[in-house]
Amino acid sequence: MTNHSLRTLLLHRHRVWLILAAFLLLFFGVVQGTSNVNMFHEWGKYQTSEKDFNKYDVPAMKKAHKSMTYAQFIKDQRTLKYGNPLRGHVTQDGTFFSMIYFLTAIVLGCLMTFWDQFSGFNRLLFSSGARRRQILAMKVRLYLPVLLIGYLLGAVISYAIIRSGVPHDYLIFYWRSLFLYLPIFIIQLIAAFAA
Image (tube, rainbow, N blue to C red; front, side):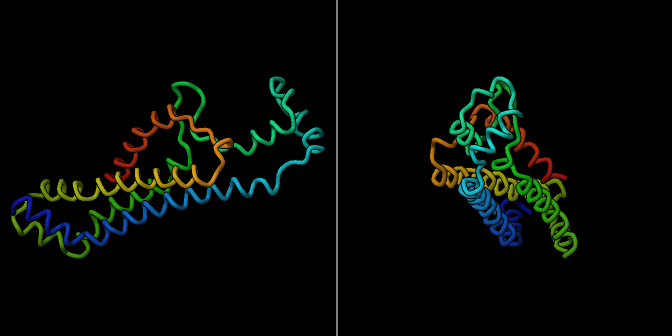
């Protein structure tokens, strides 16, 4: 069996799961973005009063922050921060590096291997003359791009929703730490997929 015919056969067999996984990853990006925007807008309803700020928060602050005014405190509390301000430190931000993506990678990896086994499709593939290594490599070439592109598009959608729903004065992105963590998270996704 040639690579082209194997790819066509696998794509025909797995296209529903691939499309579902892509839409699921994009949906997770929308959910992450809208939940952050909602969190920002809901926080304004329950902010600390100036009396409580002076009574409870100022005594608990570090010496360097004791000179902070009430307005500065409220702005600092409402500001959404993504990443880590320390240079060279990586951070796993829950919005862009969510456990949901990691679990989706595990489910896709299991689905890729076990669904064909339980349905008997592997017997058809093995009897076609294709080697096991060739079959596995083709499955990985089908699923892994969907996983990685779906994750990256989900993160971009989440970012776009956050940027459009939260005023720019209340957003801080520490891009250096976010981009330092991105390859680590992608390696984790690939490892979860292979597990």
